[in-house]
Every structure is written in structure tokens, then in C-alpha cells.
Image (cartoon, rainbow, N blue to C red; front, side):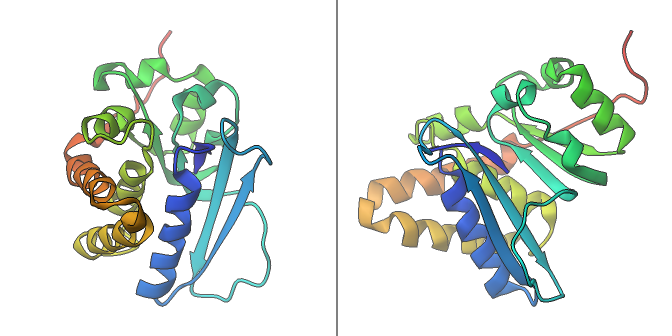
Amino acid sequence: FYGLGSDGTVGSNKNTIKIIGEETPNFAQGYFVLDSRKAGSYTVSHLRFGPRRIRSAYRIRRASFVACHQPQFLDRYEMAELLQPGGTFLLNAPWPESEVWSRLPGEVQDVLRERGATLYAIDAQRVAEEAGLGRYISSVMQTCFFALSGVLPRDLALTRIRQAVEKTYGKRGGEVVRRNLAAIDRTLENLRHVTIPAVAAS
């Protein structure tokens, strides 16, 4: 998960890996890479889980799920290259659905096509702003992950996300909790599957 320091990505992913560890029989681990300045710099969250005990901490080199929480990262970091064949790529995209594919760099298009990936997009910034969260898109993107990954039944995942929001943001006041819950409720209706053309455009 590629995020921007202070957009909430790292915090929500810490909650995500805790939920997976508690609600599934999987072993789970979160490994986070971030600049010492964090705010304003990029962050990468590596979430690993599976039936075997995890004995070390390291960056994921082949991921079944890659999420780009900030579209400006598409030209800066090689994210799609980490995706394993048949994986899912989730993009926070501020463009109309019809423009998402054409806005991707050619190199990203090639990798997604070659890997037989599945592409989803959501204008997370708009959803967050309409809920009163400003730049904090983490609840939106976290909801997308659980909906797409299938690691938990969707209803159970949404319940646990809401509980995590109440625990994490409760001390900041009921209004902050309400806004995050509103963003979660609006997420899935704004999540879009983007068709990947079989042949590259000229």
C-alpha cells in the first residue's frame, strides 16, 4: 500500500493487519517503510498473512494486492511491477472512470496487461471530502481492500473496520468518528472495476 505521510494509510493498515490476525486463522505481520519526516513523504505498508508462521520481517517482492493511495506516485515509483500474475491493483483516481486507463503511464499499462491483473479505481479524495474528512482517505481505501481481497466476509470486515474507527478516533470526538463511518458507508458505491484492454493502443 503506497500512501502519503499523514494521509492515514499507515494507521489504517496497522488496524487492518490486527483485524486479519484476530478474525482469521492466519498468521499476520505488518512491515512499514517510511521517511523519518513521515508527513509529506511517501510510506509503504507491506501486509503479509497466511497459514504458516512468519519468522522474519522484510519487504514484499511479489504481492497479490497493490494499492496506490496517491495517483502522483504512478510516475515516481514502480508499484505495478510488484504485482504477481492475476493480482489486483487498486488506484485512488481523481478522474472519470472512462479516463482512468488512459491516464496510467504506458509502463503501468503494459505490466497490468502482461500480468493479467484486475484493476479497480475510486476517487477516494472526493469520498473523503464529502464525508468531511479532508485529505484523510485511509478509511475509504481500507474498506476497498477488504471488499476486494475477500480475506474476510464483507459484512464482518465492515463491522470490524467500524469498530476499529470507533476505537482509534473515539478520543478525538464523536464527530470525527461519524465522518469516518460516513466515508466507509459511501465507499463501495463509488468503487469501480476498470476494464484492461487486451491490446495496447497505438
